[in-house]
Amino acid sequence: MTAQLPTTPLYLRVLEGLLAHTAAQAGFADACVLVEDGARGMFVPLSHSGSRPSGLRVLPDDALIRRALASTEPIHAAGWTLSGSCLRERDSGRVVLLRLSASSSAPIRLLFLSDPRREGDFTLRHSAALTSFRSLVDSAAAAVLDAEEQRRRRRDLEHGKLLADERGAVVERLDDAVATADTMSAIVRVCAELTGKAVVLFDRRQRRIAAAGPNSAGRISMPSLETILRSYPPDATAGPRPVVLAAGPTTDLARRKIVTPIVERGEHFGWLVIDEHPTPLRPTDEYTAARSARRIGAQFLIQRRIARVAWNAKSALTRQLVRGTGAQEDLAASGEYLGVNTEARRVLVFVQVPDGESEDLDHALVEHLERSLGVEVLSTRGSEGLLLLVEASDDVGSVVAVSRVKTAITQAAAAVSQPTGLIAGVSSVCEPAAFSRAYREAREVVRCVDRFTEPTAHRILAVDDLGPVRVFLANGDVAALRRFVGDVLGPILGDAPGSADLLRTLQCWFDAGRSPRGAATHLGVHENTVRLRLSRVHAMTGLDVVGNAADQLSIQTALLVLRFQGHPALVVPGRMAAGEVDLHASARGLTTDSQPHTRSDSVGATGAAMPA
Image (cartoon, rainbow, N blue to C red; front, side):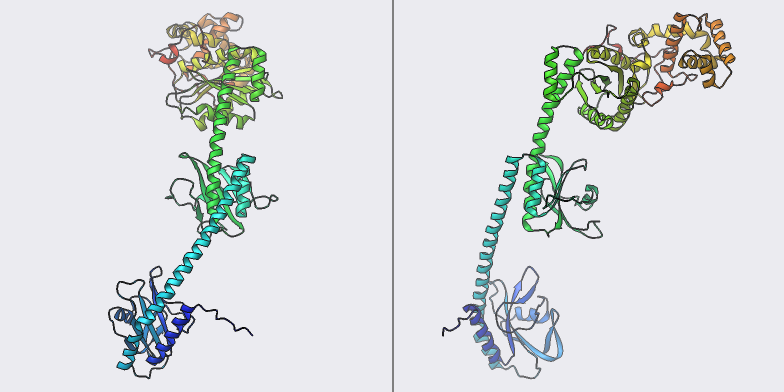
């Protein structure tokens, strides 16, 4: 029969035998070696197969420990025993401590002997025996420590190799995903497969871009990014460094999360979040998150370059459509390549951008309008402002389409622009062949608003709100316009009793389509009162507002100028009352000595320059 080989290593058996012999020579029941553990700040038993006090942990500031460290002789304490992590004086038990290692040797090693009996002498013979065994026990203990260090290094090398293999597999899988699909969703899917967990990609606006789980089926459940980021450390360094967020009532997270910012070339694009479900977190999960974040960041850069090229191409096509240059076949081919319907009817918007606005204002406006209206919006930037072409839906009438565009522009300006200063002129719905004329008309509207109103709010007005009179207001001499208003309505512009009622009646009469009944309903008076007031206007101004078309045009033009001025007797007409422009703001008066805006008045009366 083959003899069974011992399973305990030789160095452990040598230490075990030395400790047992040492305890017997000193008259104690147990013996072990205490080794200083710097990481935990205490002395712990050295691993061996012999018996030792169960759960022995001793703090370095214990009184007996300090005495043993300061002496080369054994320290005997009768009536002492181990309690918790301290050696305490009790009615039973005795211990002996002897420093084994030299002062220059690390870690510090102590021989610890214990016996549950209080009786028993510790003589000079016992002390000499312990001293004689000191070097042998210390050498055996040092051999055990060296063997444990070698085993730890070998284990670390094996673990490092395993970790390197796992990381290599992560890099290979991610490279395959980029080479095969080259999309963010593919990278997120591979990240979920590698980690075995749910993964969600958010952009900077906290919108969910892509999500995947270890299994393709099923919906991914994840808290909002706002909730997750409440636990994100504010002092976390910039860069794609994964951060593990703890779960618990203080974080509002049911499970731990690995949160990795998507940062590429110093620009933050979003967040990659890995949920600890359905498997626990592993060491390679953070590495997988970091590598996935880097590849997703590269995808963001690539997509932004593609979007910039497409934006520039669409901008050039927009300029060609407005100018009316280029063959129709070439425009159609360019539109087909870019996914733009060059035959669509559109509303043209000219935006005069205030000083100090961001260069990305056109991008922000286009994004807001497309999201709000659900239609395609083309854009180009010229030397004098922005030009937008908003697609008009076929199932919506022209009046409704223009009204929706005005409302959307107002909301977009409030969301992405400075509080005041933006001016926009909105054309009617027109065919591509009429874009050039629509541009000139929209710019004339902007010029009118800029000349006669103060920048107290965003001012958005449509071509149809002004009618043909915009040409007169946009290009006429300001001093001449001042005199024109005085010549037409001078007799009823004073503070005489009833003057305000006459002006308000004229406005309501025109707004009601020259209907006395409609004006009376709006004013809350009798129809005869309206007719009487119109007769008084005829008598005071000499203009037949009821029967002479030329006089009607003169009075209506003068009223429009007064509304731009914010005359207190006039109200903003219903078609201008949706917040597009505040005509009651303190205007640049035509009856005062104030000067018009320099920027607009410097443009000649020959019309608007087309976008460069």
